[in-house]
Amino acid sequence: MTDNNAIGIQYLQEGKYEEALAAFSKEIEVNPDNAVAYVNFGNVLSAVGELEKAIKFYERALEKESEMGTAHYGLGNVYYQLEKWNEAKDQFEMAMKKGVSDSDTFFMLGMTLLQFDQPKLALPFFQRAVELKPEDAEARFQYGLCLADQGLIKEATAAFEQVVEADELHADAYYNLGVAYAFQENREKALENLDKALDIQADHMLASHAKKILTEN
Image (tube, rainbow, N blue to C red; front, side):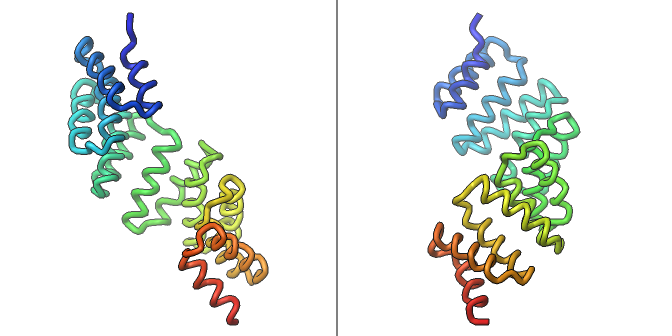
């Protein structure tokens, strides 16, 4: 028996969106009550930017299976892309309630809370995302920014150090490291990291400005 869902997921991972849609369409045709197929179809539509259509498929999935956390996560992602922050927050929270508690969900809820200018509330979500997926440099970077915002400079410095260790071309992490070391009055380390940021991105305005301030004083 052909597993259209598995075939579709394989195509989706390979970026073959038309083939993925065809496979999920077949699955919906054969098993119209399979909520997973609707979520997968929505995921493909979301990946190609058909956001409004994606919403309909996630909602259909929830009609078939109201407890489907992955449908709520998919909706959260779409609403986030549409900059509908309240809806995104509600959907990510609902996804967690329905058991989708992986690092991506914590990360996206943290990112959504930042849109409300609430880094203090976002902090534990980024912390959990990093705990669940230590290699996620972007989650760790956002965690570092939230720590810095709370005045936890040493902890933020450690987080940024880990980011540049994982991603040597993360200009923003080097910039923030530079600022963190400047706060700790380590001028040499501050300049070293600001220079690295500028090496990676010559037009990094913030790094350029920070370096100017440090070299003029």
